[in-house]
Image (tube, protein in one colour):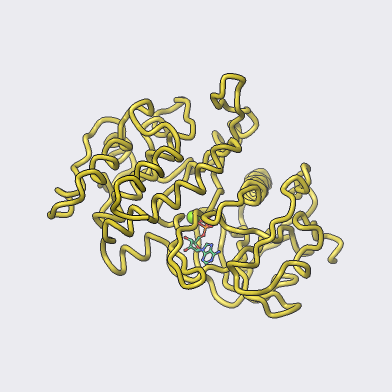
Length: 342
Ligand SMILES: Nc1ncnc2c1ncn2[C@@H]1O[C@H](COP(=O)(O)OP(=O)(O)O)[C@@H](O)[C@H]1O
Ligand SMILES: [Mg+2]
């Protein structure tokens, strides 16, 4: 039943969101309208793949698949508007507590993302669950490729492009950090290189591992607590090739500067076509993030790299968060000041 559907954004749900080309669809409405209670408790899951039909949306093509979700290219049935729909992947055999955790995390992902207004964040305009228990959110459909696919298919990107795309990603993440959200899963797959109104634009995706922090009276941010438990229980607290040393260390405190390290890893990958550290085993990678010195990008690439860009990337790969840029705003400004991009 449609009554099952909890519309959480913009008051009217799918039928009220403007239809034109995905990039302009976005009218997230008032973030405060997001209901505090968990939708997860309201519906029971069912088995089977989410292909074909999803309530108000028709799903046409699988665009991507990650730790807990599938992203589909689709259409809003009411008016044929193109959309991207992310659905919780249903393995069919998850124990109820694991499924509930996945649903709760998904709800946090949707509510977190919908708070952001940066042109480099993704617009979500619908979130809910179908009557047969599939959780989804509908968002602007991006044309382009994520950085992982782009670099794997076409090789390393030029300096100008890297500096510009990373500086734009800084804008979205700076806004996230200012509202107390640490992404914690910054990696090439989660930075999308989109074409919006004919221009290349970076979009930061996938707040599925987001952690909520709260500003203290001294301006510092600290863990609000609620999500820490959720995170501890989660199977993958990040992606080892792009994880900050403090994220790798058991029990170590992390803050927004872990995203800064991870974004520097993404810049390194985009510029060289290779990750900062390589290793077949996760433990090798983790050890390297904790203790190994990264090769300068120019060495990895085998040709000279803009000295300022190289130095900035290496600075933000510092083991200690204190030795990196302290905010995404600062990193974005430094990138733009280099004069190689943006
Ligand atoms: N709005 C979108 N438009 C087009 N492709 C998208 C969109 N959102 C995600 N994708 C593609 O799907 C992949 C997985 O999406 P993501 O949100 O990162 O899900 P997961 O949690 O499964 O990693 C992305 O890496 C990207 O390639
Ligand atoms: Mg992802």
